[in-house]
Image (cartoon, rainbow, N blue to C red):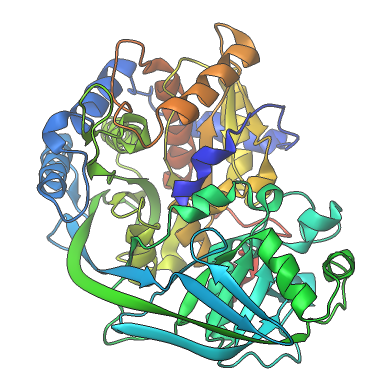
Length: 556
């Protein structure tokens, strides 16, 4: 989930190696020639300042700030002339549950010798289940490699392994990172299979009672202190009552030193295991260890809402392009040194929601109505785990088979115009080629993320569209500043993550620049306009883990 990404301090640089044909450039020019783009830094700045104002109380779900935010969005989209996107309503209710876990301070491991692990320091656990009490009583511990089932990579860590009602111990990231070989998964770049969220989901599909991931800072991309922030806190999930699926009783992490002790207790050499585990054909094995611990659980049910507005297409109204950005932030919390307790979330993500309004305005100012329907979806509960977009993906208002593309905006540029615009997850879909062509036409360039091993493509709301097969584009702010170059841009970006991200200081201030985001929004508008006024269907690229999903239902 997104709450991890501030640890990564990404330095984003380098020219995109993606190429585009002459045909791409021609079609881009034709699509852009219809109308001038009416996106301005003044208009964008007005929206952003209003959304990040103290009056909206930090926009936390389940609070008065949510109701004020939804009312603001409805008013402003109505002023622009957009229709409700969910029948006669602008909202889609998202039922959720808040699960507060109090874990046992100890975990006992029994084998030839007994290990007593200390909660928070040695392990961090929680549960998705809403039972009042969770008991793990001498459950078998099984090492399951990376915990991955990936047919397209001919990889199955669970092949021939019975983990039903057992606890699986699994490695973070995927084999490609450990091999540093582009021929293994995607080499250094993390795939979906490397994400911790996937590993817990797959363990549940395999019937495991619990899953523990071995933490290691380099392949995880963040230190164990980030994991420790989850000790005995509440976590939010979609309310699955009435359509329950199996969930592991326990999810969590253990430290690397603990993992080494576990392998030693099992009579296994950790270093020799690590030398083989990322090789094809390696078989995980039982550890002949028993795990015991417990948790107390409190659950609270409530509802929050996604916001949906649309411009109906004139020729193919059943085909949609969906722009997304999450409206939620952290609300009112602990006061900082200045006494400010409102977490305004100006960059994260008032910027993206302001972008939705600004792009909607640009479409309404077109001389002609778009041929396809253009949807503006402001999702909820991103900060809690991408849940608003997850709910939409499970309950789409517009069928996924007719959804042409998703373009997501999360944390736009706040420090000035750049020559570059960053593409997260480069190599995923043809939407990247569309953006690259538009950037070139504007005298700019598209750059890949410098740290693809961090897996940022899997950490914002577009990811839930990708999971159901919809080609999804996610951009980040460039660092090649027109005024100061890459060194200055990197310094400003790093300073934001170090000093402002998820703090009360993320608010509009005298040094907050609107011009860089406005230029990026023009590119995103032009990509969407090209799609909205053509019969093109961008595809996933060969090697994308989402291609098979899209191909399967589009063929049907």
